[in-house]
Image (cartoon, rainbow, N blue to C red; front, top):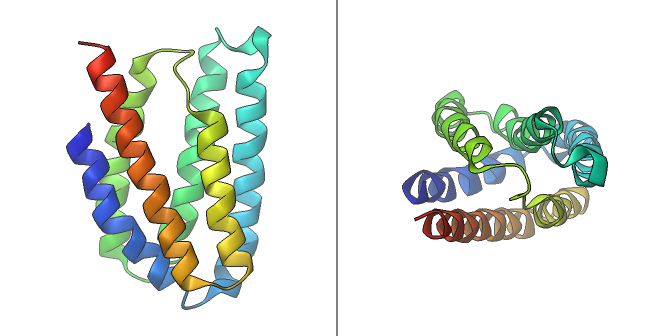
Length: 149
């Protein structure tokens, strides 16, 4: 898991740097994707939904969709394919960790920071926030790995 998260940390900042060459093309899709992710996180965190796998699955799908928008707008299909292949595995593995062990509020806040940088057409800040998000994810993954031993 840590190696997969590290590979994303290498690739995805490059994807957002390239996508930020045309921020207007990226922005509306990214905003829509963020709203879906935020809504799914809110639904997941409702007490009556925390034991229901469908809400966890929807949350992970919308979380990944946010990243897919960036990848689809990076203008490099090889970066997009590489990250997509890695992240599919990451999210499938994360789904097996178990309901209740979710980083939804943290991930939504990190996605919001990336979106704000895109809204301000600040490429350097978007890259920085993507690195922060993925580095934090790497820590969360490592914490989950060590807690399950």
